[in-house]
Length: 105
Length: 274
Image 1 (cartoon, helix red, strand yellow):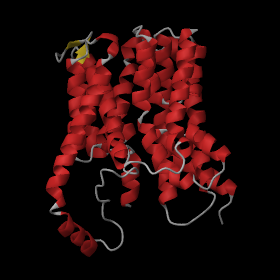
Image 2 (spheres, each protein chain N blue to C red):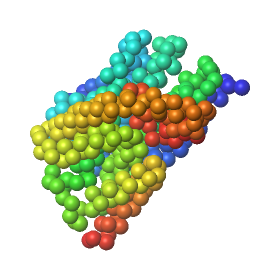
Image 3 (spheres, rainbow over the protein chains, first blue to last red):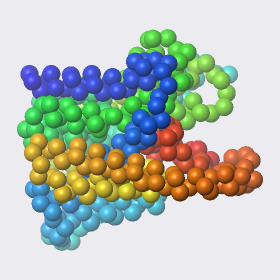
Image 4 (tube, helix red, strand yellow):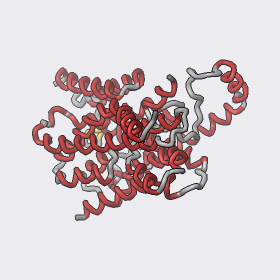
C-alpha cells in the first residue's frame, strides 16, 4: 500500500515538474540562473547513477577482471563519444560485456 | 497542405527511429522489475503514472534495496528535474493552446518526445497545428513504453540473469549523457558527480546519489562562470567571425549555456546541423 502511495506521489511530482513552465508558472519569465542550474541536472544525476553501476560491486570498488562491467562501460563510452548513436552504444556495450565475461571466465 | 491528421502522423513518423531504443529499454525495465520481485501490476502502473524510464529504473532499484519512501521520492524528483528544462523550452510554443492541451502535452513530455517535438517547433513556418505533431510523437512513445514494459514483465522469468540485461541501464544513460557533454563545464560536472558517487556510495539510504548530483552541478556552475568571464573579452571578435563565415546555415550552433533548448537531447544537435 505504501509503495502504491509512493508511486502515486512520484507520478504527481513528475507531472508537476513537466507542467511547471507550460501551465503552472504561466507567463512569468524564467530566471536565467534557474536555467543554468537545470542544464547541469541531467548530466550530473545520470552520471551519478552510471559510475557506481560500472565500478562498484557490493558498494566496493572493483576494477578487476572478475567484474568486467567497468571495461565494457568504458568501451561503450568511447562509442557514444565517437558516434553519438544510442543503438550502437547499447549494442556494442552489451556485446563487449558478454565477450569479456566469456573470455575472462 | 498541413492538416491535423498529417501533423499527427508526421509526429509518429519522426518518433519511429527513437522507438528502436525505447523497445529494449522498456523490455529491460519490465524484466528488472520482475527480477526484483515487484508485483507486475505495480511495475506496469509505474509506466503509466510516472512515465519516465530512467526514474523508474532507479525507483525499482531503491525499492529493492528497501530505501525509505521519502528518500525514493526525493531521488526521483531530482532525476526528473531535467523535465523542467523541457517544460521551459516548449512553454512559448504552447502559450496559445487551451488548457486541455497544456495539461495533456506535459504528461507526454519525455526526453524522447521533447527531442522530436522541439525540432518541429523550431522549423520555419507558423503552422498552428504543430501540437498535433507533438501529440503524435508523444502518444506513440507512450504506447511503445507500455507495450515494452508489459512484454518485459511477461518474459521476465524466462530471461536468465547470466545475460546481464540489467547492464543496458548504464549503457542507455551513457548513450544519452556523453553526446550531451558539450563544454568543459559539462564534462567536469558529469565526471565529478560520477567520482563522488563512488566515494559516497556507503552513505545511508542511497543519499550518495543526491550528494554527488549537487556537487556535480555546483562544480559545473563554477567552471562555467569562470570560463565565461575569461571568454567575454573574446566574444565580440568571435561574433564578428561567425557573421562573416556563416550567413546561412551549416555552422554548428554557438554554445549558449543558459539556452533552454540546448538541452540534453542527443538527436537534436545532429538535426540542427543539417
